[in-house]
Length: 488
Image 1 (cartoon, rainbow, N blue to C red):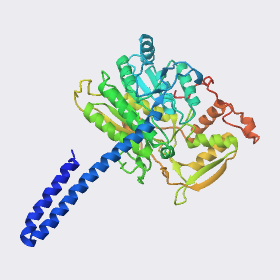
Image 2 (image 1 turned 60 degrees about the vertical axis):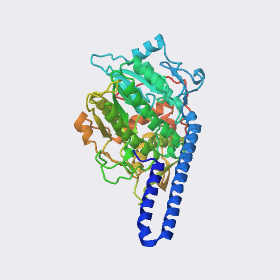
Image 3 (image 1 turned 120 degrees about the horizontal axis):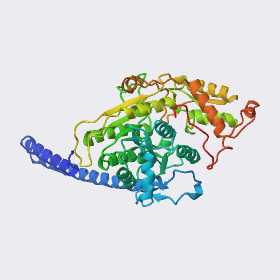
Image 4 (image 1 turned 90 degrees about the vertical axis):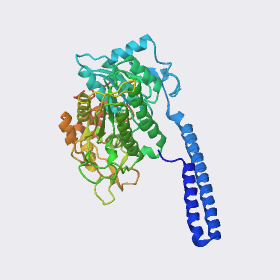
């Protein structure tokens, strides 16, 4: 433990006093007085610095407290069936009680969804279940007979209607998704008391690199505090402790220039706050594994794309803009080269997530705090291993949509993005047979087919050069449009 500032200042005074005693024999009384005065100044300065640090810390806490309620106010409700926004209950503070949940009927519904349908099946709590990767994984788990209970706060980072549509699709496959937040400690404790989950697939997070410059507190609340909340509940309130697989990010490689990116490469130079929160998550995972014996596996995703994707991702937003006849902005690196991404199709990522769950190994801790021994702590890249220029991705979209993009090429700004990503997946291949098989052409074809159907866009009208608004088909009352992907 580092010394208290007042202790440090006392040590400074003692050292100064010893120096005075030695100098007295060489320089006389005048030197002694100057040394003593200097020691008093150092001591006073140390006390002043300590007080200033305390005041600054209090100011930061107050500032975060002002922002935090807005980040932690979400609707708490059981929502296995579709509903319109008008039927949602008022927003409630996530730090308050979870009285909206509980009771015999609620527990029956939760247990029913979480109960495996096959012998030896897992019971998995999926956070971020109405998100892109979360919904696909929940469907794949249910399809093979595992028990699945979802959790999602349905925030407005991107269109909540898309998340609600995914929720309805999950409900049609008998998967319940609770409208709640991972920062609600009371709810998590109640869930672990109601269901003996064997695994947690923790995918809830605040995504996006550039958005972190506008809303940094959201990343701390979700990616750091939320992760701690999940680990705390699993370590201290679950009996038995579940194995946890969670979403880190390829962004942790930051300014690394060695390629392809390997789990053995350094990750101590994040290029964005988003990356920093994910790197912090990996350090937090190490602590909970060491202290509580939690089995924890981190997955570093590389640019996941596909049907039911995230509208903030480049391929999705470019499709919107091409259809609407709006310009798109393409970045080039500072040296003039094309920006490249290791685009990874959603079915391949789902394969990796399920492989990580199947091989996770058991936690070794207990609610009492006793640990039987070391538990698995792992991290893996999940990528496609074939970086593609973003300009190539746009060319494929143009062909599939039958319409040219209005392109504007600019130099990449210093906003946290990196010029290329490239995954080495040899560790995942060795440990759970991860082998991505989907080319960018094939994956984007699946995405465009879903995109046109979901937004009710007539391909014939596009082919004639007409402008079509991709928002025309959006509605919060839309029924599910079918299966997400072949793997689901």
